Amino acid sequence: MTTPRAYFVIGPAGSGKTGVARLLAEQTGAAYIDKDTASTRFTEALLELAGTDKTERDLNPYYQSVVMELEYLTILDLARDNLAVGRPVVLDAPFGRYFSRPDYLTEVAERHSWPREVETVTVRVQVDSATARERVRARGYARDLSKLADWDTFWKKAQNNECRWSSQHHLVFDNRADGITRAAVAQALDGLT
Image (cartoon, rainbow, N blue to C red; front, side):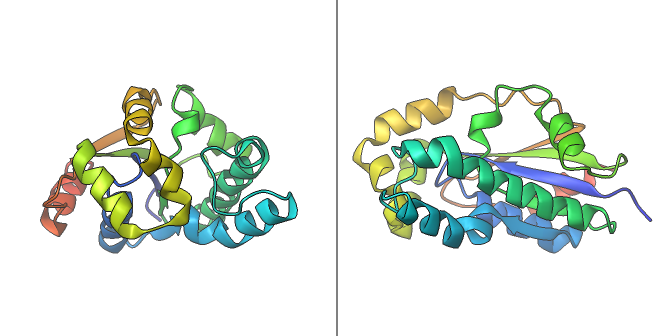
């Protein structure tokens, strides 16, 4: 059995994480684990039960202090289950809250009982502000309204949040308006071997 990899696809809202993550999963045979797909239903239910707006994340203290951590714990447990049977995983989530912790990926592997031989790959998706804003506007999610209402503040915070993770491998994709091609992903993956 080959060593499974965990690909952490990171970037701000509108960067195109999902497109890059899906291409990675397609080309590697990895399980694709998207935080929004895995958690939106329970997140909205928890926010409603707490008496808060189910669509507000960024400005919702209950979401920030309680629910968001549950979302990440859930996808990291799903990753463990796949890695344990030798299947690589692609995690599609911002992970911004955890960028300041250099040992975060080691902590994740230990806390979630990942197999020791797992290799981590940090995949950073970059984009310019105008492209990201247009993508966020076009997708039309209610949870993005506070970002769009004060885009400059959101973008500045996202750009100043440098990922300090120690990872075995790093990939960077510039995902401006033209997007990332299958060939670009294949070339980047070839460079990992």
